[in-house]
Amino acid sequence: MSDGVVIRAADPGDASALVELARSVGAEPGGWLLSTDDWRSAADERRYLRSLKRHPHAQVLVAESDHRVVGRLSIARDPHPASAHVADLGLMVAASHRRHGVGRALLEHAVAWALGAGVSKLELHVFPHNEAAIALYEAFGFEREGYRKAHYRRGEEYVDAILMALTIG
Ligand SMILES: CC(C)(COP(=O)(O)OP(=O)(O)OC[C@H]1O[C@@H](n2cnc3c(N)ncnc32)[C@H](O)[C@@H]1OP(=O)(O)O)[C@@H](O)C(=O)NCCC(=O)NCCS
Image 1: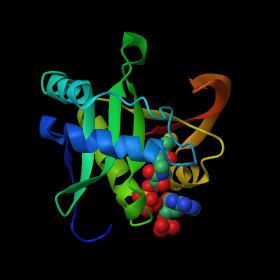
Image 2: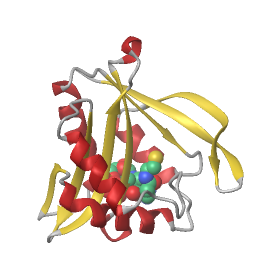
Image 3: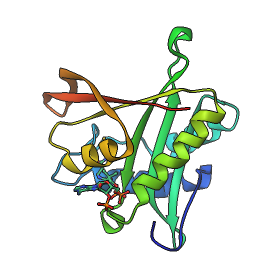
């Protein structure tokens, strides 16, 4: 990974920077994320990050470079007891910092968190057109488990998603 990038748990004080990152990645013409311009507010983000401190079943990791948040990975364990060994994740890296290993480093830290939390399977959804993300996930060992037609509503349309998963531990 590029020198000077640090991966750490997000702090409530990161809320505004995380919202800014999500809004800017969400506004990219590639349409990588579910949300376009409706990411939660900084106040809601702060509340969520605060709640994580007393909630051992989810984590938000940030990649920081030069005191700037340049990546985010959110991971949360499935709430159903029968699939409590599964956690779902979401990932984004600032356009300015892509292809420097930040995404891979966030995934590595997510695996470490998941193992510590007793999670043995990671899953995620990715849009079929998102070649960069699919390449990263496959290089990391994720496998395609399914194709979900019109699974998400994005703006005015329903869009397909690939379900990918990785067994860990
Ligand atoms: C997908 C994303 C998170 C990748 O993050 P990143 O920090 O650029 O990824 P890395 O630098 O860690 O890449 C690791 C490997 O993944 C693959 N990869 C990543 N981006 C790629 C691209 N654009 N084309 C082909 N392969 C790619 C490569 O194998 C790469 O290794 P290499 O650079 O040694 O060839 C980033 O492009 C991003 O945030 N995109 C917008 C938001 C998004 O799509 N999030 C995922 C939603 S499911």
